[in-house]
Image (cartoon, rainbow, N blue to C red):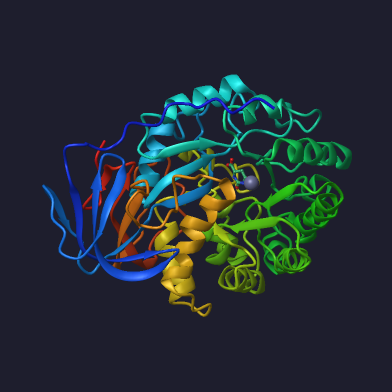
Length: 443
Ligand code: DOR
Ligand code: ZN
């Protein structure tokens, strides 16, 4: 197989400036310690006590951590630039503490061939964070025939998905896994059996019955998790399950991982924060796929994040224009914003809530574990000399109330309006460039 084409790195920080993050507590995969961090060019050059430089940022009382990594971002470019662009989405990401995002391929045209991969990566070079992309498994995500995975893999695409839909055909999914295994890439599934979910707009349960809305059962997700585990066993492919939302899925994944399968899963903030009761007013802000579930499912997702059965929090940031989200619940598109809220929601729900996770474990799910799943080698690294300077600085004491502005996104479909949350991103540094300073995006 040919070597991947090396696309040029995004521009790095100033070689003539020693930027110092002074007085913070570093938390990374190697533990926690008080230390100053010096950044030059695109790297961390020193970590220790009483370090100085010519651009000093006081970060006392704050956490200095590897930048967050989002495995699931809908950037909407090409094709739906009125809802989001790579530029606006990456700015939202930087404000949320992210230094890298993985773009989802359900754009127009779909990211299903080398030409579109190139376009997205080139637009990403001037973005506020590192922009990686996934590629579609099937041509135009139509589920009929395999996309040219090899030509996308040659451009560095490491994860393939038809996200927005699951691959329904069992044989085609088997072939994708066989082919993907040979290429050394990961197959990521949006688990939803279309014949069970067609025509539905929320979770099937007490609330769908009460509201008179057609619901999809948890089994629409769980049957595809089951099938893919079986096919993964058959083919030996590396699998990743997107936005897991039910207790049953968690149990299946835990059993498969315990049996030694090479398999990972992610959960989205809304699935550990919101329930189907949020749909009570027919407000389509709360419509999402997979749908918001019941309380027992929300608790199971939180526990699965705590015990690492689900090892990544991924936003599923899904911007939609107001005119689309104002449609009746059944007709509105599914999806909600996430990039600027994920960290604070994770701290509020998972550290301060019943799951009682440590901040270090939450950061593992938001940074170094997703970086490992996506094999983004420049992200999630320990904060140490020689590591790429992809970092975020978090004030864990700052409490704030989420508003309906939508932040830097071009859309405003925020389902958390009015919620008080803890934890705020103060600064973000991507490849040595300060992308967020004092809570303000720098470009
Ligand atoms: O709610 C969702 N929105 N789920 C998906 O899988 C796709 C996404 C979107 O693209 O809006
Ligand atoms: Zn999806």
